[in-house]
Image (cartoon, rainbow, N blue to C red; front, side):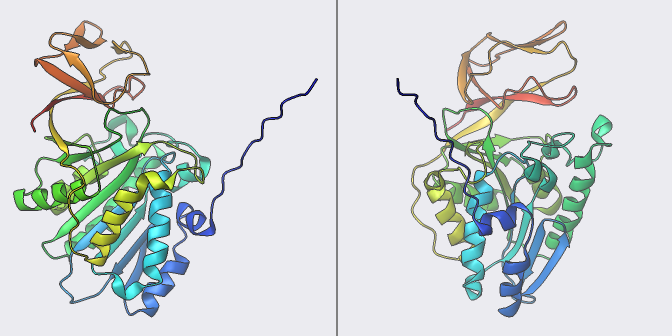
Length: 335
């Protein structure tokens, strides 16, 4: 009788990826410095590369705000490594942020609480979390980067989603971004083959919304597929966004839009007010699942959330968030 043996394939984490995941910028920082850029490490996990007096666009790129969202870490690691070896091609002032470094090292989403809910003036019960101090470091470095910047300011916060999605890639864009900058950002998202865009009218304490609100950046949270293990991501799934990001940083001519993203607006936020909060669907529900008018979304004690429009689609449903935080978005399509 032959016993079948299952081979376990260990993750292959290249030195380039390992360095970025550990917030080690020493190699790329030296190459940019040698090429004549002013290089700074304003906080752990943050790299600033600028050319003073050049009047360039200012672009912030963040990854790893959730420690288990590893695909964008790998993409940015390879892109930054290649760019540093051709440093003169960098056409923008650049801020790179590796968000929750401790959670990345631990292979966890966060240590104490969700870092992407910390970018708010009042943190309440979140104030004592390890991520609160990390958010303060990120805010200070981001403020220093954008305060001396010119009018063209971008922030792309790259994520992957916990749940599967009807649109495997999608983005959330703060509605307060200025119209011209918003149009350029949406065009770039189309070049990156992003399938859907949600225009968000209010902050849930996210990093990208903070950059838009306080520094006037054309900012977006960009969801690029599913959570994966560092070293085991299929990087071919990120080809479109990698090319688009590389082109942005090198100042290359805009590429044709792969497909016009569908645009949605937020119809309502689902806030968890108590431990009695229950969602009306299970954990297999995909992002952008459609619900008909009057359908129950969630209950929270005596309060029941229901669909108000003829159709609403659920995004980021998560009943496990802390009390007081957003447990989901309901969106409607506008184009």
